[in-house]
Amino acid sequence: MNGNDQAAAGEPQKPKSEKELKKEAMRLAKLEKFKAKQEKQKVTEGEAKPKANKKKTSEDKQVVTYDVPTEKGQRKDTKCPMPDAYSPRYVEAAWYDWWVQEGFFKPEYGGRDVNKLKYEEKFIMVIPPPNVTGSLHLGHGLTNSVEDCLARWHRMKGKAVLWVPGCDHAGIATQVVVEKKLWREEKKTRHDLGREAFVNEVWKWKNEKGHRIYDQLRLLGGSYEWDRVAFTMDDVRYRCVIEGFCRLHEMGLIYRSVRLVNWSCTLRSAISDIEVDKREIDGRTLIEVPGYTEKIEFGVLVSFAYKVVDSDEEIVVATTRIETMLGDSGVAVHPNDERYKHLAGKFVQHPFCSGRLMPIVFDEFVDMTFGTGAVKITPAHDHNDYKPCIVVVFFIKN
Image 1 (cartoon, one colour):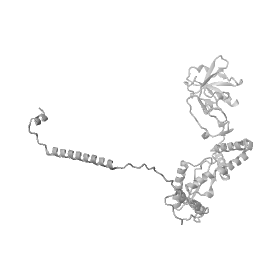
Image 2 (cartoon, rainbow, N blue to C red):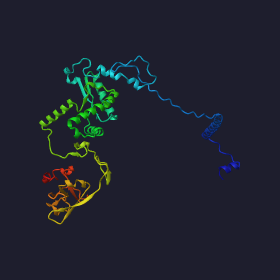
Image 3 (spheres, rainbow, N blue to C red):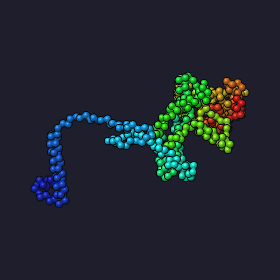
Image 4 (tube, helix red, strand yellow):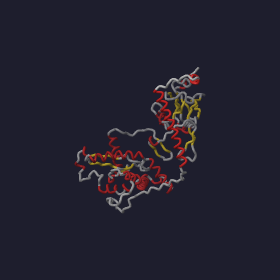
């Protein structure tokens, strides 16, 4: 018989302890509170009126600008009423031109003779010159902000500060832009004009487009010395570069040598390694090549045979650059490759150049697992092939 059966049978129940009574009272209080909350919610929902669907309207923020006539370089009129909300255009207007006009950013400001100052009393810095072909981006803004902080900090320390602005000619990028412009407008190339005339065209283009970068630098509010603007192709910088190269050559630190260059068939000019865009491909890929109307196929492994001189044998080579075959000067195999050890000291005949006998050389740079394990040597098209351990003397004769 359980506890409920005992209660039904009239047996006296065990009185609850004080802790149990307290717990029961708390439970009942929570229950009453919950019921009261539900009743209140029902009353509130009954009295609530449906809300009208109000369409939110956003007023266009008015851009407040400074429209008081002020000549360039004159101090801003601060007597006019200020806008209700902060307006960058209003605040920044006219001040920068006045700063420049007053010479606040010149190292000579305050009547100092910079030639008589000690080294530690001067602070000189140039901006990393942005390319004249483009516009400033966030990287320029970050760098110039940090440099501006340095310049202003040294001014506050009492130093004569010179922060030189300028831009870079951008090398091959500018040449390409100007050449396209010439062809579009006059149907001429730089070769038609000649070097001097083409340089003049570059200068004309720079004077037309270069102001964009300077305008952006002014908007940044940097404390540049605008009377000392530098361009990497101006006469002063040009003569400095020539002088620098001459001195380095006289000191034996630089020299002229024979090496591979990156020749652009479209530009008809050598370009630096940094101007070459390298692209890794996994297989057959069609790529747009300057100077061609249709995409060119790359990444296809082609195998062909070279006939061994004074033998009926052929050596099959594999390459993805079959178009460079006319520049081949030899065939390379790995010294541990058993398939080709018996060909040591032998030559192969170039199929299109009857007088060209090409040696079979052994070098560990060859990957035995690639293709047939034999690769063609094309020194004029591959830096690895041009290395002294690969190049053979008669390549120069060819």
